[in-house]
Image (cartoon, rainbow, N blue to C red; front, side, top):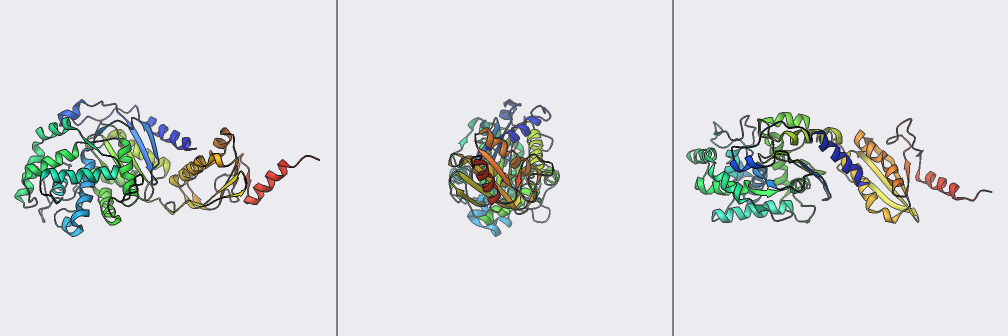
Length: 425
């Protein structure tokens, strides 16, 4: 049944596969040589289950997607007040590499532009640049759930071509916004940007943030819910640079892009998304990545302002009224992630039953995506040699005119099974 979700993700990615707009980030020489047609998509549910489409395992450098992670680490290690004293949280309305600070405070305007990100690196308490980088490296790896590797070629390329970032570093020092040696801080910054990730890594990172700092795969708490709340808040307003307003309106998920072509998006409490496509728009965001996330949001109902009670446990009960018959009782409001949970649990347990009953009599509301997914459950079960029945007295899933038989109660289904099995007199 997870194939129903997989096919939908494959279809969404295919919708944008022919888009060839945008340019590579050729101001970093090493990035100018990447395959411009690379395109991958991964989605991680809040329990760590991964869906992958396209080149989801292709490695690329994390670049500016590192910014919210270092900001979160600074919050985690030195606290909110200390970080707020050095970095603002307001959208800048400027390019990500603008050489500027807030005119009143002389601090960077937010941690998602280069000035703020460089300052965030300087706030990680350490005795040397190597020790500082290791703290950052360990934190990123814990968020992803595997040890990330440094791309030395990209690191060398960024360091050699980073005149603008050096200008930002020395500007910050002149305004007393940077205590440490700018070149040492920048060296760590270039290294953090040059760590290699995949779409699946980004999706797992997003799922860790969606779980309030708990990595769903390793079970390790990486940081606190309070740190995640602040980090996601800044990602909402500043994560997509001066395209943040369009992003929030159309996509509606906290997100961060990188000039390596990646985007990570987070739906709190539910899932993380990772997309990779290296052609960028004039704001520095992946063209196909933005289009893909927009389609995911629209078609799967992921905009965070439409989330109602779906973040609660969807399955109210799972039980066997008799041998070989398994009932999945859903409740509350059903959106994409709730329907995905039902399908995947039914698939995982398919060896335990011959007959499945989906009871949606306690579901209050459902969107079109979840309705389509659950309506397809019966056909998927039949293809697997199973029976599927629907308890849907109010027509929540099966609309008027649907060929699917709706029962009013679980007992009605059991009675129908008994009548069918009685010998004909």
